[in-house]
Length: 258
Image (cartoon, rainbow, N blue to C red; front, side):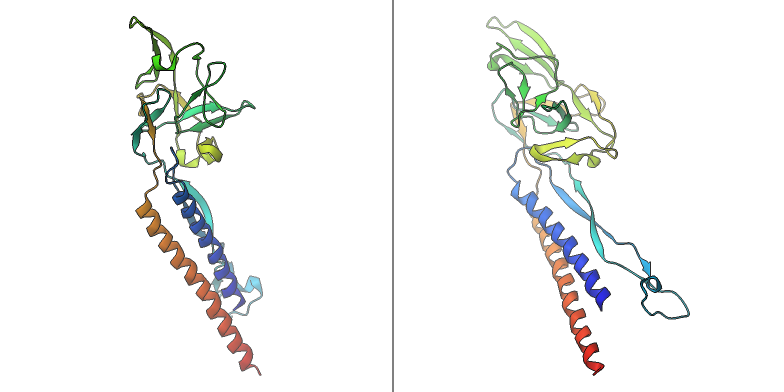
């Protein structure tokens, strides 16, 4: 009975994690550039019952499971809807790819959200302060004169219509983007499972193109999340009911010995 209660407890803990993940998705349904995630489950390592000093049939060993756990949280990079903002420093990636930003400590991170700002030195930054990794600045350049092509080329245009190229915005792809480490503010970090970043111009080698004056909305599908929430809730209730049933049987077993 103790093993049944222990196994059911792991189920409760695991499915509670699944409910928490769905809640996080729903809470960010209106967060620009947010990528939804889902919990993936696996069973715990099986052991021979004899190894646990539990009496078994002498004619053969019997394996006993140890329950379940959340094995990983998988992020979905399915394309979100592009919404027009009319702001010149809002840039969406339509297709695969990430922008690279540099933190105050020099660390590199990657982001899908392309809402940029100009700091006092003319550098492009995101809202949390990290700098967009580019080879140009917008110092003393009016924002309404900035033009960004689908291939990431950045231009400024004067009153006479003459265009001057400022530089290039590159995007980065990974062999396994699902393996990126998700951190705060919509940022992702390179990991062993994601592979190394590959830099290139938007639109090349399968990379998505850039869309100036647009932002990518959250890719959370509320109907899908509600269905997932019901499934997690039922699984959690089943595990809780298993604990209750095992406890009732334990009580009966103890009463039978009297």
